[in-house]
Image (cartoon, rainbow, N blue to C red; front, side, top):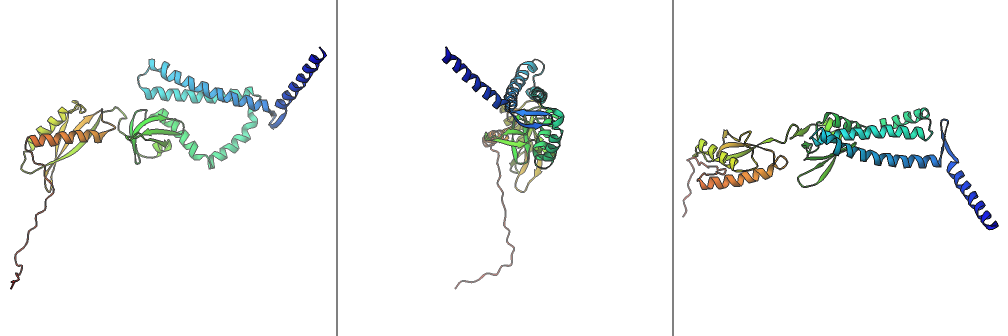
Length: 299
């Protein structure tokens, strides 16, 4: 019995030492004393806040908003904004429940503002640009965009950067500020229907009306070409070696793969012209020699 009391007393002393270790003052922020247990509380709370904000954002975007909108980009934008609001409000609640005097953080906020002005301005710029993108939606999930030398489909819009996937399945991380400060070509801003013009040249002896009819047949036979708006053939110019046309087609299946559609149409055009004996010219140059050259007699 005495041994049990001694063991319990020793255990009690150890627990008091541990409690003292966690409650001893490390530093102060204003009138608030920061202890190890305060730091542990903050870390656990922030991790849980981030976890639940992600789950809440996905639940709202994938379940709630699907009942009110069929546009994935709109649901993603709203759910992301809700997540930011949840994080900001949650951080304020966590700091207050930890017993930290928020008024004492004004000096820290001022110093942080100076740091943002000098060292973190790019991060801040990208974050604010991300908020603008989510609200104004100049680009959306699934859009076919072109910014600088990058062409691809928008896969993800986050707080700092946007992920663009190219036709080679390469993910390119583009800072959000690029979409605000640079010229961006959005091929599918309103819808996925886009128009392409493919040049075609034939010999001068061919009938332009017949060429137009054959090119329209090729367009009509391709399942990737839309019937409405209808394909068209434009007579572009009298070239040096050929009559030049443009086959103009509309497509929604090949918005992100125009070269594939171009290849399919050119294969079909070649076969169609071959079957109908249409000559496809190649550049030619005639050399005319003027008279007056002296002839040398060979002995």
